[in-house]
Amino acid sequence: MITANISHVLSKTYDFVIVGGGTAGLVLAERLSENPSFTVAVLEAGDNTINDPMTSIPAPYGRQLGNPKYDWGFVSAKQKYSNGMEYPWARGKGLGGTSCINFLEWSLPPAVDVDVLERLGNRGWNWNEFYRYSRKIERFHPPSKEVTDLFPHTYGDDRGTSGPLQITIPPHVYTVDAILRETFLNTGLTALHDPYQGEVNGAWFPSATINPKTWTRSNSATAYLVPAQDRPNLTVLTQALVCRVLFAQDSSGGDLIATGVEFIHQGTKHVLSANKEVILSAGTIKSPQILELSGIGNSDILSRVDVQTRIELPGVGENLQDHIFVPVSYELDPSAKHQTFDFLGKPELLQKAAELYAEGKGPLRNALSSFAFFSLNDMQATNASIVATKIEEDMNNFRNTPGIGSGLREQIDIQLDSLHSKASPEIEIASLPMLYSAKLKPEGDKTYFTLLAFVVHPLSRGTIHSRSNNPRDNPDIDPHYFERDSDMEILIQGIKYIRTMAQTEPMKSACVGEELQPGSRYTNDEELREYIKDTLSTSWHSLGTCSMLPRDKQGVVDSELKVYGTKNLRIADISIIPLHIAAHTQAIAYVIGEKASDIILSAHQST
Image (cartoon, rainbow, N blue to C red):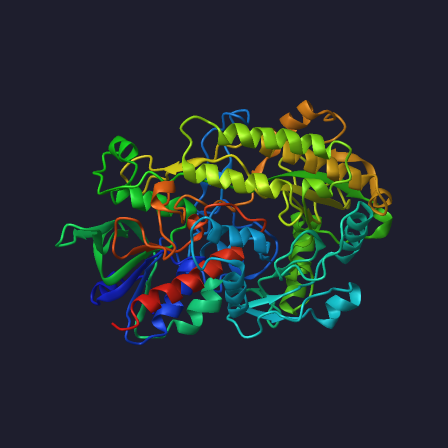
């Protein structure tokens, strides 16, 4: 049952209490409640937004960002190495979490990136397991004839076809994508037939979490919760902000036992007890905050916010890593009549698109397309080896920093290895068929497109820590952008690669006028650095703040997702991933939910 009725919730007892009804949390709720002998409660701080058009209609992307009903609206600290800029950090709020407000892209990481998890000490966390779970999640629908008639899509035969999450290759801006595909190939990249088999390097088209029968977003609420919502052993309470986890000391003086959680509902504090386990699925930002407010973390940080230390665990809130990107934009030749997303800013055209959508037609069904991933070695640039040498020097300097922990040193060693490997890319290019800019606005009937250059394996490490002991106060988010110059170097190379594309056919002939952004005033590396600092954006893919690592390597959870020093508190969200992956993070959040469910069910199979 989905409810905001507190008396109904408090009248029951629960075996499992899940904190957060987001992407991974609702996977857990559905899977654990499949066993009718287990009772499950989910506490979600946001509202029930199931079937809300703001979350169900695929396009326009990002329209929920900044709206407090759908977005937590976090903001980073001022960034020392980025002109003191503060950056918005959107996160989904409400049932389904960020799976309701993301840009719908469904991608899997390269196999080598997932196998790193096992290399870092987490037995059973490898590509074979990840791929098995991805197929369990997917209900893949091949692209319709409408799509394939306009563009010759390729896709593998070994996709999941019976999972709960609806996935397809939806309509897209075919004319722009055809130009970009040929240009990628003409700059030396290869066309990737199937990016869902552990290889992502090359140019390809992603699938999207869209149900082609209804052309609505498929998210964790619609895919997992709705089919299970009438189970008598499952209760979901919205508008419930969890403050902290409550503990009892083991009678033998050993690890702490989580007995439940304290939460706020409509201004009043309540306690919900858990007979078996408490699972945090509150995400990269909120999970470490809840741990700290529960007395788990670095004692120096806890004392500053007047919280008594229950478990000394200095890795909490550390090891933050984030994908960041910058835009490069061009105007398209008007004679080609491209139907880009620039029309979304024009009320009359948006209304026409809404009318078409009601008939199951039109551009509001679209999702992102035209991706390319590649290593520095793949770039046809005379200075690629020089840049790689500079990045390697920065990595070695970071690795040899006095006092650096052994866990971080091991991660840097892996990043050094991947720097010279073509199996794991360093750069992503993604297309947006529109003018994407904070400063520039579309003019008249002109059409545009923007290419985004991403860092996919950042070297900089940030932190997220509690600002106070008040759970309503957002934590301090400091991603330490560009603390390591390698991340800046990679973005500079990304912009230069895009500029090479702009001088390569057919993209060269498809564009008119000068590059719109950065533009001709940004030419050398120092000028590009300033442009990057001013236009940088997070891609909302942050992870690592509750890393799954050995405890002596700044780990927070073990490979069974159990928080060190506790008997029955687990974390199941992307905060556990200790080293970033070359993929957008939606799929890995679902996989964590599925794998965590199996781990927990296995632990209680005889109870």
